[in-house]
Image (tube, rainbow, N blue to C red; front, side):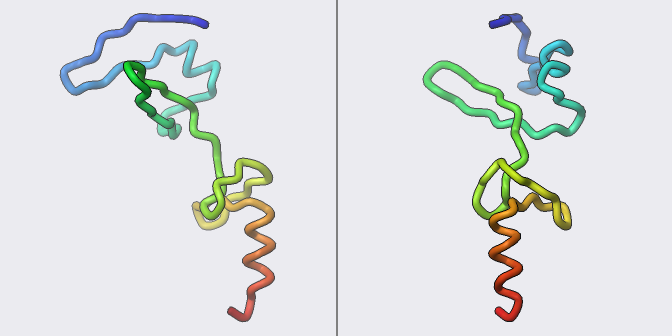
Length: 81
């Protein structure tokens, strides 16, 4: 595990080091999850997940929303609803 010390600026921001952003493929605007656990703040790359069920597999984008294959099938089977 790599550890780097950074300083929080006056607006509460911390810059993520370039090698870490590169390793996780975090470009400008990439979503991240921020979790507080006891005395730790954990930042994780947010993987694309289904808007409906949260599944992270077989994801496709539809009108700016992520949807998995299972939910696509469910939606398609309810055409007359």
